[in-house]
Amino acid sequence: MGSRDDNLPVIDFSTFDLKPGTPEWESTRSLVSKAAEEYGCFQAVVRKFPDGLQPAINRSLGEVFELPLEAKRRNVSEKPFHGYFASSNVNPRFESLGVDHPETFSRIEKLTSTLWPEGNTNFRSKTLHSFCDEISKLDRLVRSMILESIGVDKYLEQHISSTYYTFRMMRYESPETIDRTIREKKVGLKAHVDQNTLTILHQNQVDGLDVQTRDGEWISVKFAPQCFLVLVGESFKVSSLNSQGL
View (cartoon, rainbow, N blue to C red):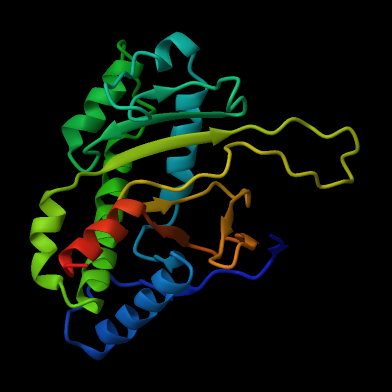
């Protein structure tokens, strides 16, 4: 295995008004299909969000992680990684906090009241909800294109209804190196395969993600401006094969 700095495919989704059957749809679908097959992921350019939205989201999420541990632990779930996941001996530099169905505003309100029972007017619940709602549109577009590219788009609604969204806030910490002139990589989360349908990842100006290619090489992802990383999860690969009868 080696590593390289080649970047992943970048696909423009600057408009969510792509219509099936149009030249724009066909062209974008072809790029999505090729990237999913060759890399299992790609960067999606999204310019629909108003200026200042993403920095506002980053500030709000930073506020969440600055809460005392006992406050974050109030966000519980029976499902692993869906509530609060604290750092551990296995992953000492990683913590995350999740909420299911974030495209439903009441779920974001519930999260806010759980973390701040006394209230918090600074936490942008409506902004976070709008952000998640727009990302869900990107998710549906990508899934539609992948299913259409393999000839099983008639199962789209069945596929969508069998899944739901989870919004996960994640923080990785890296200890300072002794010699700050040396760029030393520190592992925040060990190598793993996403088991879900799609992962849409937004990072806070920190290029710390590596992805492995089919030939075993690792690519250090360099996020392009206004980009989200879309990764095809294992469950989507399996469900797509099942839909084809393979």
